[in-house]
Length: 134
Image 1 (cartoon, rainbow, N blue to C red):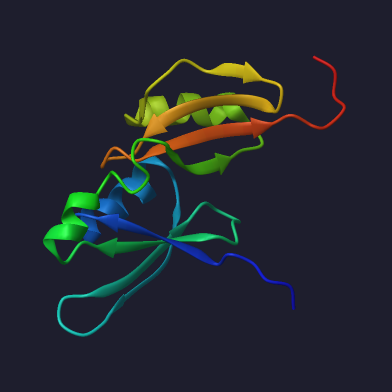
Image 2: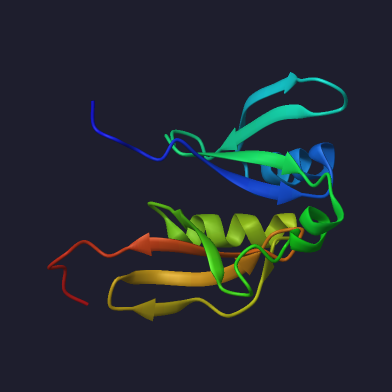
């Protein structure tokens, strides 16, 4: 079996607020929400049809809390591919997703940076088909 990235841990302030944001504003599916020991939970969300998931990991220490929203030092952290950029861009805007820039055309596709509820930066991107003319 080939290797693949199954999940990425995203440090969050609170399980429920993060789960609500990713489900309601971004339209992600809830894959799992399982209680663990103490007040910990295994909360996984993913865009519909995606094999890669986000593990919403509640910050438990002061060091982890300091990293909420800043896991990459201000760089784009996650890349959300779509087959219809404008559909998703307008739907996200209507639900209150904060875009940090206007959409732009790049050699690789149509893209705009948005931030999640904690300030993590994401690219919403529709990849251009290789060899397609402009």
